[in-house]
Each structure stands twice: as structure tokens, then as C-alpha cells.
Image (cartoon, rainbow, N blue to C red):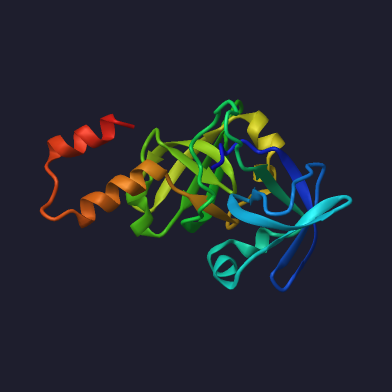
Length: 203
């Protein structure tokens, strides 16, 4: 489990085959889970100045793999008893989004991201979403595009500063929206709206 609060912007030392080697200040242990650009991966080697993780063919197929070079976001998994901040993030990337526009408003930035239409059902206005490991709040949702508003600090201190129109990003949608949508879709007989309200109230 993660929070979507980036611990460090680390540097990719190499990415050969399935092995991704990261140069970072953070020192994990072998077997630790760590989110790299929002994808939960397992540390398989610890080095003097970083660590290596494995990306399966399935992971490489699902992720915006072209972003696993130069700099990447990293966040270690939460430990039991730590203070919970940010959002509830699993490190399970659902899809790849494409940045359609970044609008500078002076004291903030509006970022418009397009996804396949089937994933819009899991993107909720004022709900949470994770972009390359950064947990953010959704402002507006259209047919295939949603809008985020980012403060200058986030723009400066994350890889959002490097994004432009056409950039691809890893997206993890709202976990609770996914669960509710799955239950509703697969429930036989169909749930009533009273039951749906009762379920959402628990979260």
C-alpha cells in the first residue's frame, strides 16, 4: 500500500531486458515493495548507490515504459503503524493516459488527460487518482478526458515539470470506485440504489 506522496526523484542507471536499476538516496532491502512511477515493483538487488527491480513482460506491456529512463518517481511501501497521508494507492496501474493540454493559470496548472472510455467510470469528480505515482484530486470528468489542477509546488517538485502535450503517464484510478463498479456490474440480481448508497457510505 502507498500514499501517492513521492519520496524521491531518482535516476535510472540502466534498463536491460527485465532488470531496471535505479540510483537513489533511499536504501531498501531485498524483497521490499517500491512504487516506481506508480507501479509496485519488488527490489531484487541492493547496490551501494541504489537498487534493482524486475519488470515482467506483463508489466512492461501495461506501463508507459518510455518513461523508465532518466528520472523516475519512487515511493516505498507504507509500513504498519506509519501515519497515513495522501490517498489510498495500491501501485496497480490500470491504464496509460495521454496528456492533451497543460494550461498555466498563473497560480496553478490545469492538466487535461485522456484515457480509454472504459476507464472513465472509475474516475470520479473530487475523487483521487494517481498519475505516475503522484496522488491527485480529479476536478472535472468528460467523456474520455479528465482535468486536474496542480499547484506550482507540485509542478516543480515532481516530473510534471517535464510533461507536455502527448506525454504518456501511468494511471491508477480510484480504488473504491473500481471496487464499487465491479460489485455493481457482477451482482446478481442487480443492486438497488439504497444498497449502493449503503456501500459507499462505509468508505
